[in-house]
Image 1: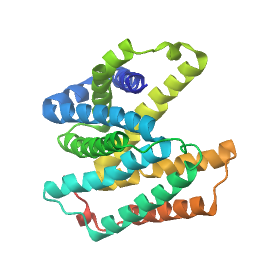
Image 2 (image 1 turned 45 degrees about the horizontal axis):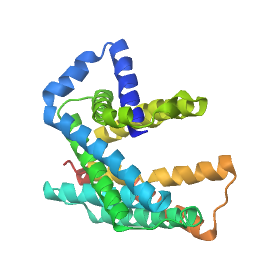
Image 3 (image 1 turned 90 degrees about the vertical axis):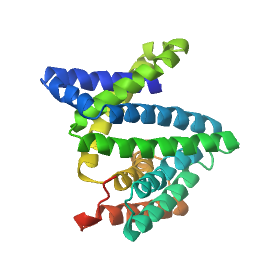
Image 4 (image 1 turned 60 degrees about the horizontal axis):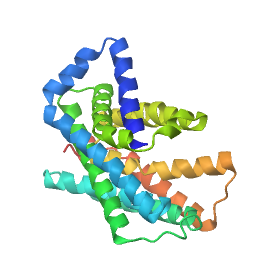
Length: 266
C-alpha cells in the first residue's frame, strides 16, 4: 500500500507538472539541493515502513499515537541540534496537542485494539517512524529554502519513495489493486491523501518552520474522529470529547503565534 500511494501520487503530480510546463522547476529542485531530495526520499520511505509496522504490531490507536505523536518532539530536537531553540509557547502548545491526541486515540482505540500486545518492536517502529517524519519535515524545509517549489518537492519525494518501495510491491500481493474496492482505495490514497494532501503540507512548509508544521499534523486524528462521528455515526465518550478539546486548544495556540521572529528555520 505504501508503494502504491507513493509511486502513484508522485507520478500523478509529476504528470500534472509536466502538462503545466513546470518541468524546469523540477530539474531546478534536483540541481539546487540534491542531497535534500535524497534525504526527503529516504525519510518518507522510512516513515511509511515504520508506521505500518508499528500499527500492525500494537494497533491503530497506539501505533498512530507513537508515530505521529512523537514527530513534533523529534522535529523540535532536530531544530535544537541545528541551533534553533523552540520557544515556550511551542513547547506548551505541542504538549497540549500531543496529550489531547493521546486521550482521543486511547478512547477511540480502547475496543478495537484490545487484543494488541504493545511489544517493544512495535513501539520502536513507531518511534522510528516519528523520527523519520520529523526528519522529512526538516529536510523538506531546507529543500524549499534552496529554491524548490512545493509541488516539485512533493513529486520528487514520493516518486523516489515509490521507486524504493517498488520491490516490496512486486514481491508482495498487489492483486487487491485490481478489485473495484482496491482500485477506489488506491485512487484515493494516490490523488487525495498523497498528491493533494502533501501539496498542502508543502505550502505550510513554505511559510512555517518544521516543528510547527509537524505539530499541526496532529490535526489528523481529530479530523478522522470528526469524520467518524459525522459520516459513520460513531459516538465519543466524555473522555474522547475532552481529548478533542485539548487537541483543538493546542492547535489553536500554536496556529495563533503572532511574532514572525519566533519562527524556527532549521
